[in-house]
Amino acid sequence: MSDQTTTPTRMISLPPLPLAARSTVILVLVGAACALPFLFSNYHLFQLTLVMANAIALLGLNLLTGYNGQISLGHGAFYGIGAYTAAVLMNSLGVHYVLAVACAAGVCFCAGFLFGLPALRLEGLYLALATFALGMSLPQILKYKHLARWTGGSQGILLDKPTAPFGIALSADQWLYLFTLSIALIMFMIARNLIESHVGRAIVAVRDHPVAAATMGVHVARTKALTFGVSVMYTGIAGALTALSVQFVAPDSFLIPLSITLLVGVVVGGLASISGALYGALFIQFVPNLADHVSKAMPGAVFGLVLIVFAYAMPFGIAGFIKRMLLWAKPTRLR
Image (cartoon, rainbow, N blue to C red):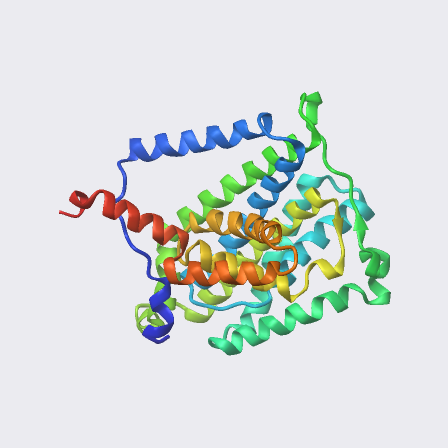
């Protein structure tokens, strides 16, 4: 791919923190996150649960777009596949919600890998067009009359919110938040280890210099397909967790605007950044609501203005902006 395409994904690098300091920061953040269910109302916990689920989806899309350089405009469809897989298993077959989430991950990985085998031979905008076509078609497929027995057709599927196991004294919202948080932590650790491994270096090499990567022995097509599969797996898990939280799935919840929103979250949070997925999830969850409070008449215009400001003020996303501030605050670390 050309330099013009890959330049936005190059992040500002900081010298790594010592292991002890990094572990301390992570433990403090995780401890604070675990304390939130006992400090906020059920409604705010519902919002934070959606933030965690969307962070997983954005992390998966960032693996594909930020680290592998492939553009997808159809991840909302895979979000829906994950949500419907969990919903159908729970509603029609009585499968436990933990197993339903795991099955959604497996189904979405297979779907993404199989879709990626032919589609990822395309490049750039042609791949984006192929995924866009998938995003356009899935809602209609879910409404198909011969599948309505399973999908509920246009009416969708209602779900029961999971309750805390073993008689633990937690509300349903508190338990679902902690359950989603635990899965998010696992998925973030897997993504970090993947990117820092030789597989992650191959993924980035395919983004930056596919011909050179192939010369060094990297199977470009297989790497792209596997990356697409892993990315879709993350998105499917997010869809399943969102279905549990919202307690409802319907075809019109997974239209093209959802795919665009996920792409916006990745870019705003920071391409090729693990932490950027969380920043992007906070952005897409709360900024539209704030825009609606600012102007009931033109919330879209306010949201668009905020996006323009972010694009000019933070060209590397929120994660890149934070790294710039850290470099500015501690310039001696570069010596």
